[in-house]
Image 1 (cartoon, rainbow, N blue to C red):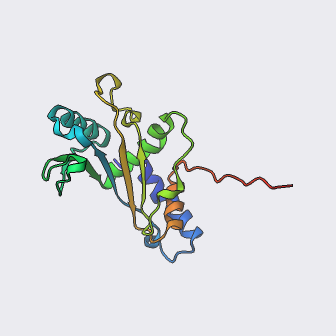
Image 2 (spheres, one colour):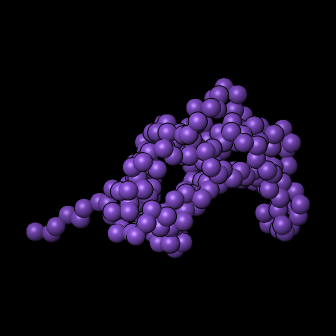
Image 3 (cartoon, helix red, strand yellow):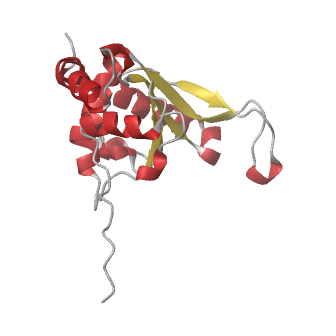
Length: 188
């Protein structure tokens, strides 16, 4: 079964963006390549039980088993050892990616307390967008009673876009809630 957001993208958003940017064909329209979820653990990564809880939480959120990332260097000030666990990471592609984006924009982000919108500063020069979430419990798959600790999460959306403008138009068409620019008050 095709995810709802992917179907909407194919039927409506491609045509809208093609007209907006005056593109010659539909294959020039920006699209999502992958979504990367990353949860760093810090000092909690040494505790096997906490690491296992994070693996379970991220797999519930993404629908896919994450990999455990390891430190590449030993740094004494950060109390890290080379080869020990640093966090968990999962890369979503295809239908799972579109289902996650749909749940993120329509269910998870509106559940954030005092949510003002996503920052416009998260775009890089290659058309990708990254942002962080302070509480992973905003996702409905997570049972709040079974969570041992509230953790943050980084989400990166990789697109085929070559610039910030077309990437922003794609995310806006996909219903991402961005902060509105504040109007400057005139001095009389």
